[in-house]
Image 1 (cartoon, each protein chain N blue to C red):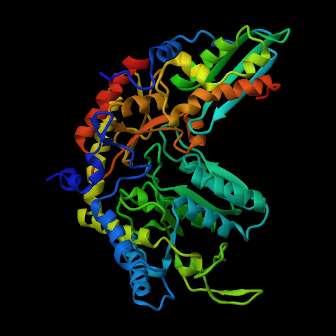
Image 2 (tube, each protein chain N blue to C red):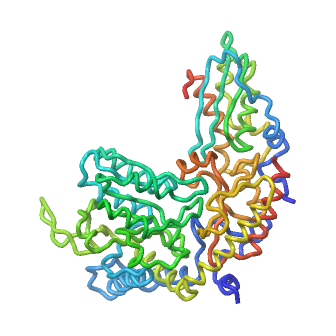
Length: 126
Length: 406
């Protein structure tokens, strides 16, 4: 049996199997998508802004467990936050939730959803 | 004695323990490991004989030149080239393909056609795209059939009076498909097209003979065949090489230089500007010697057996899809697979936790991934030092990864 140490923490495994924010919010106003050229992972983030706040966030994509879990955490962390606060989200915030030992080669899996978030908040674009 | 029992002790890196497990290096299609003789030949060169090659009128310069040119002779014999001047040293397969795309397309007219295939590595796609854009050429690709063979009927339909170049891989780095080089070249010749073969995945595993392959150019990378990184081989039929204008200038590739113009050096140096990879050529000689001592037929048989074992083992696992030609069709030493419900990078990371190194992702073949309908695959590949026990470990570990994430 493979030891489940390393990058695949309980949080990552749980959010990979059952992501909470994998959905397209109705009336999303800001949408962005990006690809990780290393692996071809693709994440699309959709935000519905209401009075300067992220009223709802969701994502779809084709990505690895780490990237999917990260996108799920990003969507959760920005939900309900003022756009300016959402913009300030950093990899450390996501890593704190994931509680995983992520090596440099897989850091892009964590940060891809964050760069998609920045793109979405800057007006979006596929 | 089996081949791996014979070779195992020659590869110092295989003694490594990775994540608490003995290393099972199953990523030789990306880059193989090196036997001690290669490593030592290169350090001995640096310790005893290093100087720049050609034009150095001193002892070390002569030794370095002799060693560098000896590598050319060795490669000539290894690949069955008619003449030593047909062997050009580049920096790798990618470099060789770029050189050929630049030089072959330079004289083409807008609307001329370059034909590649759907199973190419990006290295045999993008250089042609760049050249096509510059010269306004049409770039087309021969499709593959369902099981991963080249569609030769489609090839015939795509070959036209305007087809100038047909560039294709000998062995697919994903599917393992071995393309019928001589047959494809014969069809291309009928319309007068020049043929370029990417031999990166073939040279490490198959006995090569340029006199029967029938292509005009053949390129490969020594680092995938037990040799060092940083050097490549470009073989070209003499009359074809003579017909090419160099696209890169510098020292060594000229006979005489004036301010406004220059006269090119003879083959092969005409295509080798600047200081070449000398130590790497020395390492290449040692790699070829090593392979020749084993015998390429024996190497091929060893890797065929491992590939068969991996195919049988992985195919039998529930939820595992194996790509490439069906069982019974001869293929190269790579097995690409997908585990249902799992991303290939996660599969590779979980295997790495067990000390098993495989490649995962698009394998620089995004058009092929799209054709197969996947974002990527995991890929195990074998070399002379790979063992049946390692393949068995791979199959067991793949069976286990689903329990972790799926």
